[in-house]
Image 1 (cartoon, helix red, strand yellow):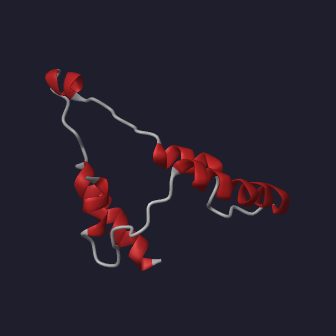
Image 2 (cartoon, rainbow, N blue to C red):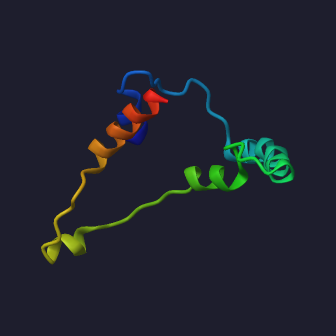
Length: 88
């Protein structure tokens, strides 16, 4: 669902190539070491790959049962983030 939301925004397309997680982590490892040696954030790290490939599933129904109202809608915030990235 997340990929569909992001790829529906201008400037984004669905990925055409699937890279298995273990390959991505293996390729990121030398970049991670280089990043630490030169003390520059090269953006591609094993930790970041682990974060984006690990399911994060938060169930909020209990909060809603107690009357909690969400300040932000996830879908709209993802769309705003994609628009912001396009300005960079």
